[in-house]
Image 1 (cartoon, helix red, strand yellow):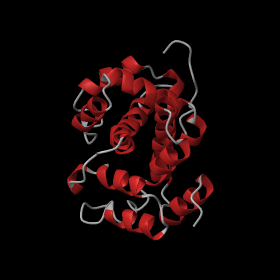
Image 2 (spheres, rainbow, N blue to C red; image 1 turned 90 degrees about the horizontal axis):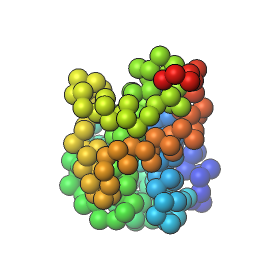
Image 3 (tube, rainbow, N blue to C red; image 1 turned 60 degrees about the horizontal axis):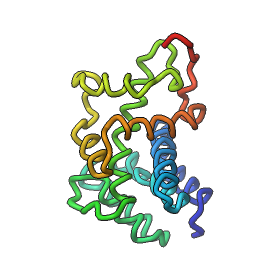
Image 4 (cartoon, one colour; image 1 turned 180 degrees about the horizontal axis):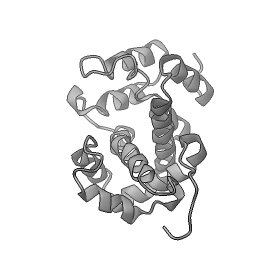
Length: 193
């Protein structure tokens, strides 16, 4: 199988039908592409890694099968080992080491994208364009907000990248703003938020 964005999209949508899971894949892809540009890495590889990292989750939503089923599909489609290793390592419970920048970045952006979506959806405008880094970091401290999101993973991810959490939030937030329409987060922007 050819390994480009179109082929990756086809693979994703073959295994994932739920709109929210597809939006999550798009958010992670955007963040991965932003970091690839920042680090001078292969944007296509990094983006596709983000796009496909959870492609098996809808059919295999438990720790016994995810991301193992997805990794098997990636192997069958001859995706590069660095991508396969990063997908395996994005789930801490697999025990796979995050040895590459690709793996570290995938882990770092995964939980954060979901948290940013949650912050956006509680704003009156429901527009990501009204979300500021400070809004995200303030909600980060409220453990009852989006309680299922692992703050520890987000902090560990930023640390692995050698960044402060606020700087990391800024990179991911800007990447997600760039695809607000695809994420369903255009909302109705206001000027006073």
